[in-house]
Image (cartoon, rainbow over all chains, first blue to last red; front, side, top):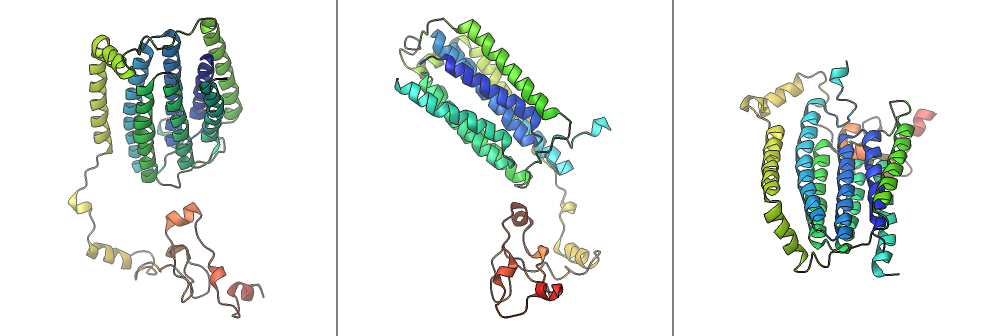
Length: 99
Length: 254
């Protein structure tokens, strides 16, 4: 099977994630869309590793997973902190600076 | 058609559909479940491409740890935190979709131009002593410095989350029973001084999802948990009314 199909799938998933970040307003769903984008990039890394016969793509994908885990931990802690003070998880409600 | 082709064309449309569904469903919990499905499919794709270690790590770390973390936060923030899908910036959604399609065109055309026509090497040579061993050799020899830095990042993130999520509760802030009792009687209304009404219809049904009847026959919203009403799991009290008795609503309409 042509491994380019995986690259196209990864591009589609990345775009879906990017659109989701813009369109959705629940901060948790926005976060999940960011995770989707990271996963799409990981799929591209793994596919390139397979295409080029080189394991370094998999090492970078592994690092991406660790960074994604860190990002989720800190991001969700920020969401919880914001929710505690504002009783809302919508990204549009945190607009104190625009007023 | 080889087995991997069949698996790909079986799973790839489902993956894209689940990812699209993630954007379209209203409740955040459903989005989380769909994302977990996408991640399991990605793990299968990794294993198909000779990345067995990453596939297992994907399942353990993403669908195991990260998605559970998401679900925990959803429970903390409340199951009712579904957001309205009404756009409040005008023209945001068409613009976002158009830009997304443009981005997809750019990405696919660029990558296709850069990589089509090249022969696929495959990982048989790199994986000759096992995928884990090959990865470990790279990780602990060539990338050992990056590995150390990323472990520092992980510890920093854990500390940051602890600092952010920690709240100091003073002993005075904890209300005693006496204070709560006095506050109930000195509040704006004395109606709930004896406690909130229990759920259920007298002598017919006492489940928690059936609102109690007030003396005038109306169901009482106070008698059921707010979580149940937000989830829409509240039963109609009228369906448990005794037959043959005059219905309150009918009397009102007369």
